[in-house]
Structures are given as C-alpha cells and as structure tokens.
Length: 442
Ligand code: S3P
Image (cartoon, rainbow, N blue to C red):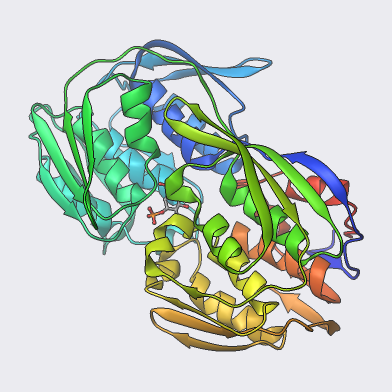
C-alpha cells in the first residue's frame, strides 16, 4: 500500500452544507465526568476518533462499564472515587494529551497505582505542568523526567488547594478541577483564560456549585469538593477545531461557499473566527444558541481573494491554540506581513507546530521569520505552486496532515503527504468530507 496520499489538483468550486464530527474536548470531558457520576449517562454524537476511543478503553480498565448503543454511548458511572481495578495497571492514552493529563486529576481519589503511557508524540510532551498542582492535593504522582510514563496513586486524605495557573492551559485547569471533585473543602484556581468546557459541564450538568469570576487577565474558579453527582445525558456539538480546516479551505478555494451547522462556538474557542474576520475573510455566524452553558452556532463562509495580513493580538492566542497551523496557511495567501507573538506553547503540542509550520511555509516558497516565541509570515496572494511538495516527519500530528491537505487543494503543485492514519486521532472522516466537496485525492 502507498505510504502517502497524493493531491495533484485544486478543489473545484463548491456550494455545500456540512456537519462536522463532535468536539474532542467535550467528548473526553463527558467520558471522564460520566464515569465519576452515580448511575447512567448517555451521550449522542460522541466523537468516534482514536483519542476518544482510547479514553473509553481506559475507563473500562478502571472498572467503568461503557456500552455502545445504536445512537448513543451509555456510561454506568461508579461515583466519585469508585474506580475498581488491580494494582499497577497500565493505561495507554495513545496520542491524547488532553485525556492523559485530565486522567491524572481524575485519579485523585483512586488509591491504587495507575501507570499512564502513550505514543511517540505524547511521550515527548511535558507532564510537570499537571504534576506540580496535583502533588499539592496529596496525590502521589511520578514521571520520568517530567514525561511519560506517569504513575499516579491517589489518596483518601486529599486536601483542597489554591493554585495560580499561568500558562493559559485548559488541560492543567481541568486536571485540577477533576481532582478538586474528590478533595474536601474549597479549591481555588486563579487561571489565565483558556477553554471553559470543564467548568461549564460541572456547573450546568453536574449541578455542583462552582463560582466563576472573570478578572482583567485572570479567571477565578472556586469549587467545593466531595459532592456526589448523578449521571447526565448530553449531545456533543461539532468541533470548531475540525471545522477550522473546512473554513480555511473554503476561503482559499475558488468561488465556493460552505455552511457548517451546529458548531461549538464557546467564546473561549472562537479565536479563528476573530482572526479571519480581521483578515477580511467572508465569514458569518448565525443561529447562536445556548446548550447547557455552551454556545452553539451555524457558520457561513465564502471564498475571498482579498485577505489581509494580521498582527494577531496575544489575547487571541489561547482562543485559537489548535487552529494556528491552518490560520498560518491563510496568512500565507494574504496580502502583507502577519505577525504572531507569545506562541511558544505551539512547541508543546502533538509536534513542535511552530517549527513545522515555518518549515512547511518555506517549502511552499513563503518567507517566514521564526523565533522561539513568535512567527512572522510574509504573505503572497498570488502564490501558485508548480513543484512537488513532500510532507513527512511531523510526528504523525493530525493537524499538520490536515493543514497540508488544505494547502494542496488550494495552492496547486503536486503534494505527497505521509501518515494519513494521523487523522484518526481527531477526525477520521476528514478525507471523506473533502471528497464530498469535490476534492480529488489518491
Ligand atoms: C485542550 C486544551 C488545549 C488544546 C488541546 C485540547 C483541552 O491544550 O491545545 O488540543 O481539551 O483542554 P492546553 O490547554 O494544554 O493548551
């Protein structure tokens, strides 16, 4: 079998409607919280990707019964500290930093040893960021030089903590919140803003009193632990991080139009929308509505030939953290220089996305200026490739693969893109949807 995927022609004009698969962050949070609930929970439109399936397999290993029905998944929650398993079990989190880090917190009240391992990419990522706060609760947690494998042994004698989270990491905030559920008394987190799904689910679905206050540059969260909660049904909205690839595809394609329905449009996730708007892209949201504290919307996007470069405000960084790769591609085709600062966290993702983005953009003839914490992109609206571009060695980062496909379908040239299987971690039907819009992919 061919090891790479070939794209040798531009996507023809399209005018379509799409539904995007369920949000990965919400899918993983639902599995963890439903497992800790008392009794049954059901979820519709769960993302059926490898990251989420690994979460399901792992929770089953911890003694949680999870059944796939025709239209939904059902979890039989075991209660706050009810995981049951042998000592020293091994959990494989695969590629998922979110699941691995949140699980560290969810194991707070589990007094047996659990070893967490992961794939090549996850094994290179930092875990000290969750180890530091979780130790303060009284959880015994060890790493190999701040990386996987992580061994977690929770405690019956947890204490609540006060923690200042300064990275703007939702994974760190959420690991703390999950641990706080098992600790007596009030945990307080002062955190740089990041995606708010965990606190929203705790407040609106678990009905646990949680106080959320926004200050100028920090959010304050106060939560009282050791409160049991009942199972809850949920329907996962579409993932804006997956929709992002189709939004930019449409903008860069010729005379095309796309409607994406039922996307999670949580304010902490809409950086891409704000950035593309500033770049003068034709993008509109409608039908804004509330679902259990989350904001949902439909998105209409059209091709535009007059994109402008952007000096991206730092305040949009955490709001678009997973979308930067595809935003950089839009900047490559915009008029003028685009500048992004304070983005070193991109080096901590499934791969070093800052380095890979710079390398990729250079390979398609775009001038860039890469620094440790910033990137300048000298856009070229007339870019039209003729040569062969090979994309490989990106640690099987799903988002690098998808960004490369969008580039191939909108910029010309002959692309050979390796590691197609990487899309399974977040978006298994990505290529099916591209073909539905008319893309020719071999
Ligand atoms: C996620 C948070 C982000 C994001 C990741 C998913 C989450 O990571 O990059 O893909 O679901 O909480 P950080 O919060 O660590 O930046």
